[in-house]
Image 1: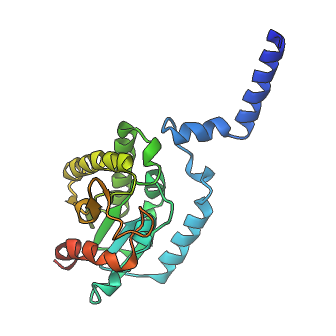
Image 2: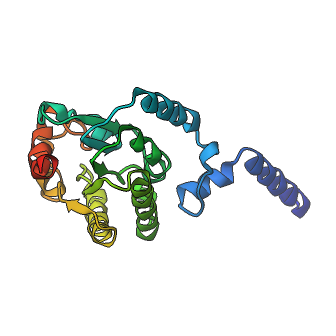
Length: 226
């Protein structure tokens, strides 16, 4: 292949990658840049969610905020006398949690229990994780400045290598809790066995079986009812 053909092919690939946002998507995955909020695929869904929740005029004691692991819970079963709203969003990552934090304000919670960070963790360098988690905390605090915020550790997973990184990230979350005046809650060790998720408690190595949210509930009971 001639040098001219190589240049032409490279040019075509570059233009194609630029027009399809391929490069931008890869940079976002690597944590080198951030997607604009209005370019997010869920932008209007979240805006619609916010609009609906706001018009319900709810006022709850506790909001749970996170991804599918939070979504899979129903802590009303464990705290029947506490008004609770679950903001779990399956598949959500730290940028997503930062983006939709404003929705929490619709229910005016006194306390917010946050869990996030496992989605996208494998490809996220620790310095990027720290930045993204910090931005998420700031967004939650801005949304509900008078609420008590509890940062819950990331849970172990079946893969031991990923679980080791989870442990490193939990150390970061603990330090960020101190820096931002939040309460850190260690849930990791409730579900860990031999350096990974205890499969007795999980249905797939990441998500909990519904009956094993009881350990989580007991770990946070003193904070929920205080």
